[in-house]
Length: 187
Image (cartoon, rainbow, N blue to C red; front, side, top):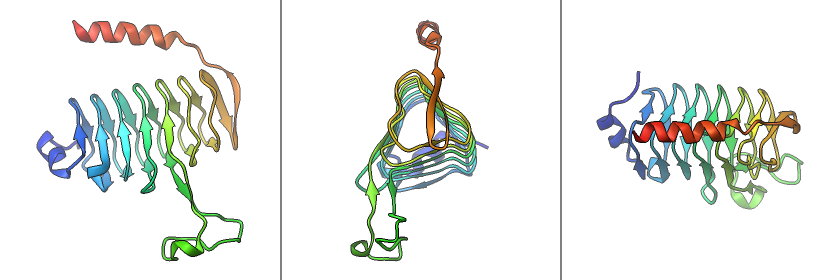
């Protein structure tokens, strides 16, 4: 079940556009730092936290999480989407053993990496994929299911694997379809 506009407004987002569908089972931490554009859909059991900008025509599927640190942000550009169980992170502990980990430990004993993540226009990230801090996904990139993005991608390529590597080019026909869609929507 999706929230009514009145229920969405009560959450206290920084901004919310038109035609926004948010599941009543989605969770938001610090919603005053989250901006939502037009034609956005956020499905059941999604978690969004901190500094997030969702532009227009975005879908975030079931069980996905966008978790931004306090000094970084996640930006999803127009026509981008996350399939089921995707995870986008802007901060991570150091697991090498040179520092302690987890939020119960004071920061002076931890070594936290924090970098913003941008998911470009027309990007789609397949089910179960993870995007780590600084793993920006360039315009038109398609990421196959269960992939791990650890560094920025190149535009208009298909990535797959752990870590994800480019395996082919992505067709740009969607740019023509975008123009047609916008013209149709304007009339």
